[in-house]
Length: 131
Image 1 (cartoon, rainbow, N blue to C red):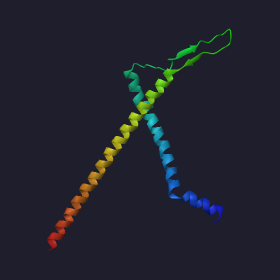
Image 2 (cartoon, rainbow, N blue to C red):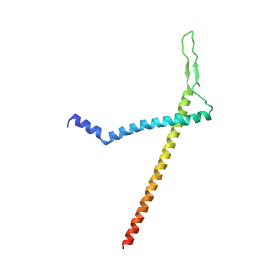
Image 3 (cartoon, rainbow, N blue to C red):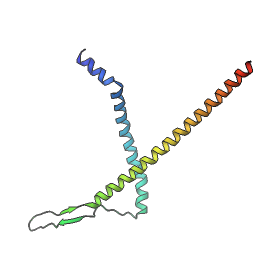
Image 4 (cartoon, one colour):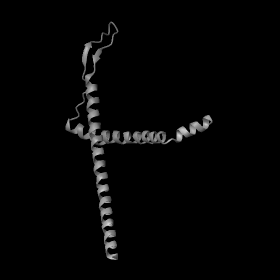
């Protein structure tokens, strides 16, 4: 088997294609979640918290000295707090979307199941009437 044929077989193998589709859909889903959080959720959070921003909070370990030309040494815990808060908000949004999608999916499956039961009942009735 040639290298070209092996490569073709590898690329067209189901798992590689599924992975590629998953990465593409994941990238698109990330953009949707980012837009939802930034444009819909965060303005509401900003309104509720009066626009509080913790990114400037820090613990200064050593002040800057212009005479010695040294920079400030600090732990910027405010930026970390903002990142953790954003993480939890994104997590909540993703959880809510998945929960909503699961509920809609279950509703669709229930409707399909009800249709199947109705059709089976009609078939049963038709078969009973033939006798």
